[in-house]
Image 1 (cartoon, rainbow, N blue to C red):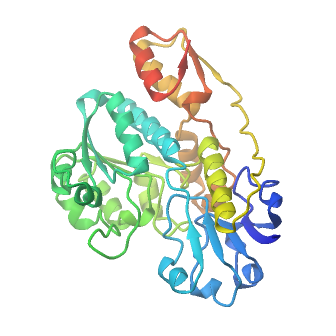
Image 2: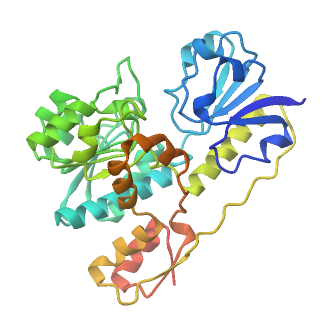
Length: 372
């Protein structure tokens, strides 16, 4: 069976792989339209375009493979009712987002001059990504509070999880890792709204590396201006790419929705998308996948680095969000360009660390570095 596939041109490690199953056309995600998808059997997409009746009606599309963990860009109800299957890549970028959050936490600790081991972090949403963030925060010695009502209900676990009110009262840092849901018992759309910010006790730092709509961006800007919130790290924004300019200038770290954009995570998402394609159409051939390039500087030498800076130095060698923050704050109109041309980074296991102090070695190893 020779498939006709339309794929987002900005999905890494895909070219030459999908072609092993059929005819593949590549377009930037913002150029997907009724006309370009009409004669395709399958789509391999990112979150740039919304897939619902307005674009899918009248097409021959049978399957949408999203190389993402989320699916709020897919009208799942319409697809289910009209025989269009959809698949995502859950957990593909969990380690990448953890790397982003860890790097950001270390930056905040240095900028605001606090010790992470003395701070409480509230993690809202403890799925694939939130669980990775939880593990990293514990390795950093932080006190961790977990909030995940769907998991708590499903698992009947009233000891692992706490309610959102406790996090609002006790957390110094609150990080969100939920899907975006706009209705139902576990609605997360504007989960952090004006009322949420008004009830915060400890002027926490807010982190959003999940979905833009989880946080009311105008309300967050107001909270930052009022001092109700002491800082913010925002990777996911409402109304991307037309992001809130006032909020952009107020936050500590501002990035163009790239927290999950490690080479490792993208490779995994591509592999999962291809597996979803193969499984759905009953294809037996196992395609050859591209290899992930090694990092340009895989060796991290901590000789001469002050003890208190060794951990952050190693983590920032793999990823430091401040260059992206400066670029986005200077040129917010280039959001889509920054995101689509982002140079993929490698995760901790791709790096070897030498000359680390013995007191730092264990944390580095737990994070995933090879320490020699």
